[in-house]
Length: 250
Image 1 (cartoon, rainbow, N blue to C red):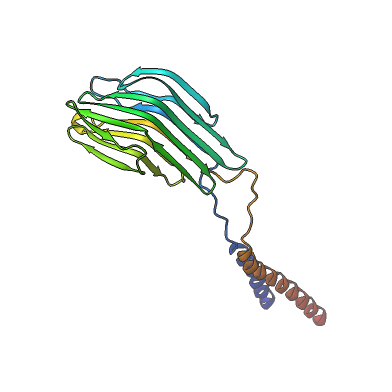
Image 2: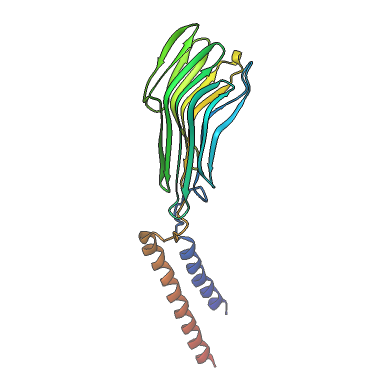
């Protein structure tokens, strides 16, 4: 009886080992595609109010949000501000964009003028790409202007004395594969409250298609499948041998 029990345990262990050795497919971390977009936002500035993301579109539910002109906090424009997001769970894709033709910023110690601001982001299950560009711009400190690079490479940083720093075409990706793009990101010095101002924000992340059915890697299936089949055959063989032994004993 002890031999039979040991044989059965060994056969069952072979089956369990075969099942556990099947590799799980790699999927996107997000359970569903996401996207977010807005044209301007800022934390509180000395002598100015904080500005929540404006206009703001988020997927889901997505869609286009527009605003004609703005005079709020540090931001001033007569142009149309547009934020748009969309997504498709069926194929795991999403898109985001933010745009405004002209925008002025009053930072107190400096002023910024921007034209042709546009940020875009497009994501699939395999990753996301985007850009945050300006057609032109300048920052003026004590009446002395400094031009800002048009269509700058990703994460172009400029230090502005007595003000802080500006990052053009800022791009970061988080652990979930979500890409965040800011056309212009201004960080003020601690003496100026260390506030952040963002112009042209687009954020997106893809996900595994909702219709997809997890598949076993053929190379893995070939190896682990053979082990599982061998385990089944071993179990059948042991049962037949034990049955024959029981008949002979009788």
